Length: 180
Image 1 (tube, helix red, strand yellow):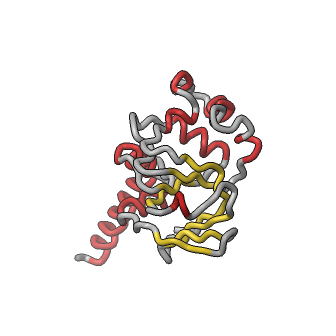
Image 2: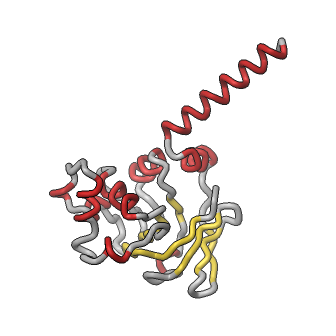
Image 3: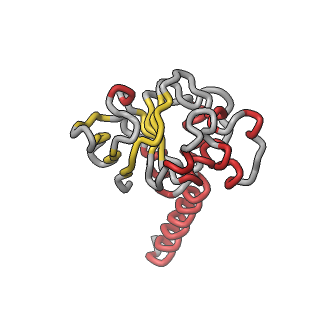
């Protein structure tokens, strides 16, 4: 997977953070992603949408994504250019949902003490480290399960399954041509 590099756009230091709070529970049923992006982060930083840049990352505390695994908050984040989340740990339902959407998640115990907002960081998947270029340090993260890495790399569950089906057809066709 390619290295992710960007700034720490926001740090959610609340354990058991419910991502619905990013857009506000009253806005969770909005289906227009541009409209969701307009309301995103208003409680935390009203200038967030003006400050975030493509490639930026979010950082979270333990059990990030706790609660009902709704997709609108992170759709808004992706629309604003956020490319992934690095957290101390994740709620299993949130993790599975976002990985199936192809949105990179990095479980990295110690990340809260490792970064400050707007630090320039990178996730080096091959080396298994998060590098803080602002501070000149690095910290290891937990490796992704292979299926999760493949799903994120494919862009989500549907592209992952399509890729697998195509590979299986290709293997079957090759076996038929080879007379195996």
